[in-house]
Length: 221
Image 1: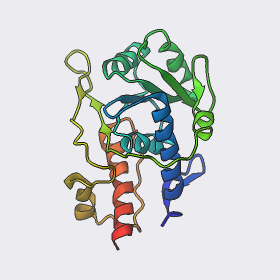
Image 2: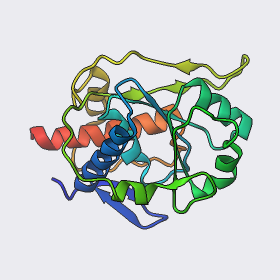
Image 3: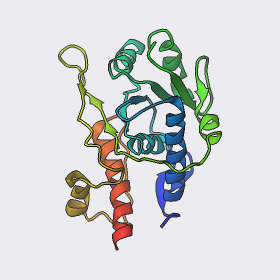
Image 4: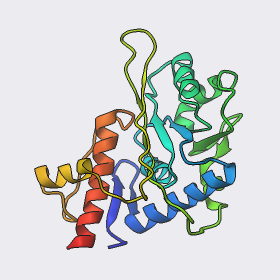
C-alpha cells in the first residue's frame, strides 16, 4: 500500500505517503552516511510539529543512529546543553526556530552539520536542498536505531535516557511495537491523531508505533 497516507498535516495541507516516507527517509539516511555518521552516532531534532519530523526519525532508525527530540520552548543555553551532552553530530531545525538556531552557533562546537527546513539562517544549510541533492540509493545495511530522550531536569541538569542498541536489522518488531495493535486494534484503516508536541516521548513514540503497526498490519493481512 505505497500510496496510503503515512503523515497528514492539515494545517499545512501536506500529505506524505508511505512510499514517499520510505524514499525521503532513505535519502536522508544516505546523506547521513555521506557525512560519515556510523551506527551508534547521534543527531538532535528541534522542530515544531512538522510533517517532515517523521522522515528524520525514520532515517535515524534505519541508520542505527540515536535521535534526541529537543523541546523548542527551552532557552538557547538549555538546548545547547542537550545538544552537547548527547554528542549530536547533526542538528535539524526549522526557520520558525531560527533565533534559537543562531544562538546555538557559538555554543555547540561538536556539531558537524546544521540543517534547517523552510528557509535558512546564518550557519545553517537547507534541509530540502541537501536531501534532494542526495542520490536515491539503496542502503547496504540497515540497523535499527532508536531515540534518546532527556528528563525534564527537575534535579539539576536534564539526564539522557540511553538504551543500548541491540544491533537488530531495521524493521525487526519488538514487543512494544505490537502493543498498540493488541490494545487498540491498529490496522491499515486507522488514523492516529497526535495534537501533542512531538518533542515529548509519548507523542513521538506513539506516532512512530502507529506508522509501524499500520505498515506491518497491511503487509501481514
